[in-house]
Length: 231
Image 1 (cartoon, one colour):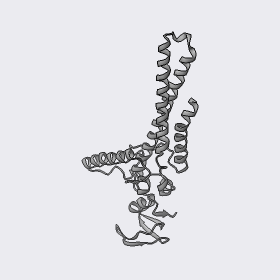
Image 2 (image 1 turned 135 degrees about the horizontal axis):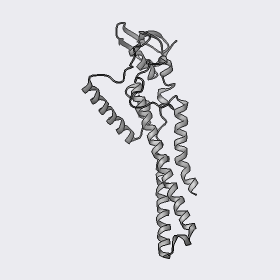
Image 3 (image 1 turned 90 degrees about the horizontal axis):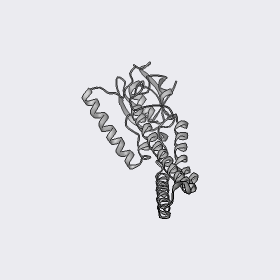
Image 4 (image 1 turned 45 degrees about the vertical axis):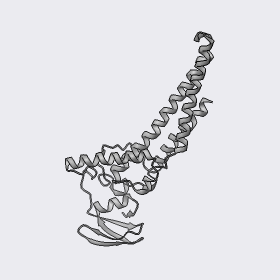
């Protein structure tokens, strides 16, 4: 029974890790910006862009999290019930080893579920922070997959980061090294209409058209999945 109780929380973590690894998000990116917040500071644009930014995170599994939390409560209730019945018997623990074992199993299962739930949430928050450093503001497709507390976290994180950057007068999300090329050859994957770019002027970004665009402005659109970088 205790094994069944831990299964939901275990699957939560396993499924999330598998999803992140499949979408190039299983690495050790951190909120500190690592070796440079923006794509282009190493490995080129293509090497640093997510395969599908809209799949940066799977949707928050509210039902599974709630089920795991209920299982924690069930373990706790079982411990309380077992201890209550044992105290009424007024016996020593060494006379009822099976009771002591039962309490221990429930308690360890409770702690296991707790650790797994914390790991699930922490892994999601680390990916959210890493995505913020890599892409800037989270795309709508990603925001829609966050839980309400995660959305609050993003707002607070944005506020702290913006406040710090304002005080320092520096943009910490840009790359530490200059791009290897000033213009990137890209193909438009989403109709963006006419957009204004530095030193090249306007460009009509219709789906399927190919353009040479300024590196710094193009890479953000590439990360968002609106442009495809062509080698």
